[in-house]
Length: 112
Length: 115
Image 1 (cartoon, rainbow over the protein chains, first blue to last red):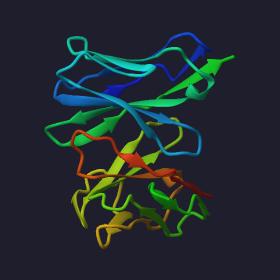
Image 2 (image 1 turned 30 degrees about the horizontal axis):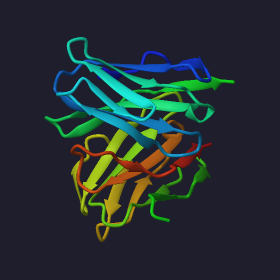
Image 3 (image 1 turned 45 degrees about the horizontal axis):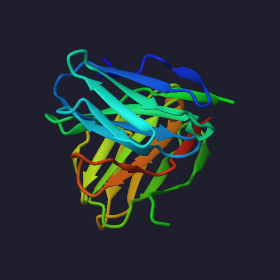
Image 4 (image 1 turned 120 degrees about the vertical axis):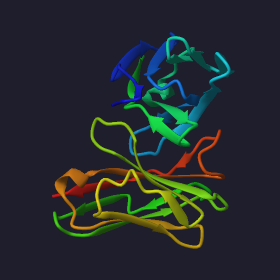
């Protein structure tokens, strides 16, 4: 049973527009969330995180929004750039077991 | 370099052979993690080390999988009698402390192909 779900396997966005990547979770015990970015043949790199006590965290072009009542978070990238084309993983930290659980990822294509 | 280093980057082997994957974490990082990513899947947690000890081995898929870490640094993941379903990218990550509110630093992975 997947506790962290990224329901869109892929997403295509025009360069300069906003990219919105979504993530849903089922466990209310998650206490913080992370987004990682992965290029082919490379390991994931940390992008941005958010604590469950917040509803927004911003870092440059990247903003993560958390809606606890809906158990939903999203990553906004604006404006989207060609170098943003990658697979994005949503991850959640489970305080009780002290584990991090990853989603299956969403492949983002930035179109010229 | 200063990042997490994994070797080999690619490994092709025949079914039934044993393989050993190596991970050099970032110097000074107490925690070390192994994940695998099968085709079309997310990152599957395998095992983590706090120093040289592995408190949680629950993610290892079978008793053919084992891992060790020596000197609080290098770790090896061993798969015995490999099967085709073991084909995946095996990723290693490290962090200053175990889990907690901090990101993990990943290596580029070992792509394992079982023929």
